[in-house]
Length: 240
Ligand code: VGL
Ligand code: ZN
Image 1 (cartoon, rainbow, N blue to C red):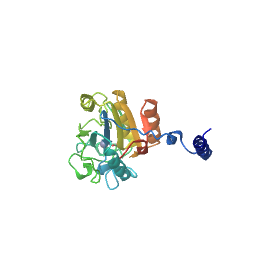
Image 2: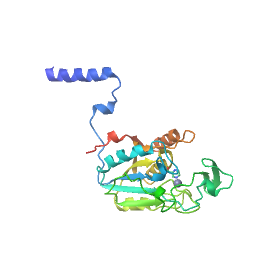
Image 3: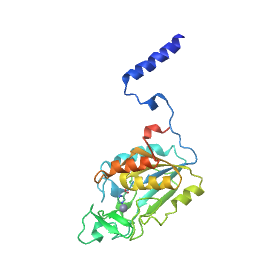
Image 4: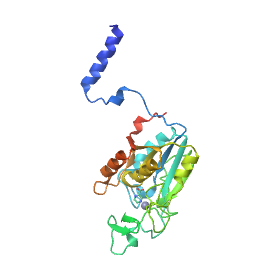
């Protein structure tokens, strides 16, 4: 055996002895989003960040991660939760109900939220540190007064399309990477609908934060994984 080959084998043996080295760390293969991939940045709005009306714990931490990812994508779509005043998803619209309780709507069970992301308010604006100058589409959702829309593809009645699947398909997009807020609601529903619409779908975990009502983050990951959504970290991507 050549000395160099022996050295290589010894190095691998040493890595193996560490035990904690994940198999993928040995292969430098990173995921490189192609021209047929889009980054979908979900609801990185003031309302979902500390100081907003429905703050997600550590929500601000996703901003630098998403900003760093952006240069790797030829296609970027940004979404905004965009509710009417008095929207049906607000607890305040249901006498006797408090935020985070549920009610039954014609389309099923609805979690009731504090008033949030009201159309045109500063609370509904994108977070000021989000820097996505190359984003091509800002898609608003949840604007029908009687229907919520966690998903960027389909409203909660599961009938009304937002048009996003058609937009992406007409632009030749085959793969989507979903990031933003909140992991267990708008990110998960968007990723599940993307998969259902036939897109290869990744969720980048460290570019998301969850609300976590009664274990909803774990349930969301379980559901997404079962449906073929791939769970990755931003370090799995080839970033400049
Ligand atoms: C969201 C709750 C209510 C979200 C939106 O963006 O995940 N969650 N509205
Ligand atoms: Zn909402």
